[in-house]
Image (cartoon, rainbow, N blue to C red; front, top):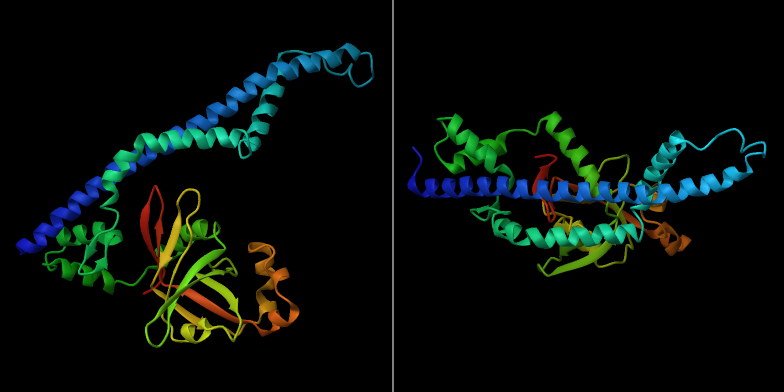
Length: 313
């Protein structure tokens, strides 16, 4: 039998899920509007440019007596071809100014229009229960409390969920999804604490190897104060937000020294953190200790989403 105290929390969970569904509809509407605007902008640019290119082509056709110009005559098929080529061209150019500026300006207008609606749901993005953030498992809690009569409390449901091993399929899906986010970053803020519990945070470049997105590698000077702190194994990480306000955070992780030398990960640094290898002298590279941070789970936050991904128990 669900207690009155648990029922109050469950009602809040239900309200939260309903609010999140409404929030998702708003986000989908915003995303759709932005996608349609970009598509229309590309088509409009191509439509404007096509007549000028067609006229230019027609001018060149005045020299059709030249061997190459006599091969094709101006007609509707040429105009269509020019239009399609223009579409392809502007699909590329939309990533650069001035088209990029136009898209960003429209995105700010859309964001401003929906800011109030999204702000209403912000308080529900995170849901704490007994000092634990459980927003990512609320759907499971509600499901198991309804479907499994043996689970009589919220604590029972959470304990049951925690006892379930991460399936291989879920693990692979989470890694695949996480990989899309991680490739946008090569810098993290690493927070550690010394033996006295005094915290410290540092901005550090990192790389991933072999396409494994939840293990981050970084090098450090063996004389650096953070080495002794890292050896204690107490750490947390977060990334600085992107233009879409995307960030990754985690305090469920394992940090440890590896057997790698800097030369083993230098190629990854060259690809993922341009200029980093050149910033170190040969002597510094040889001294570097390579640490790894293995994320057991991570939180993905942005303007449009708030979710947790689990990779292991």
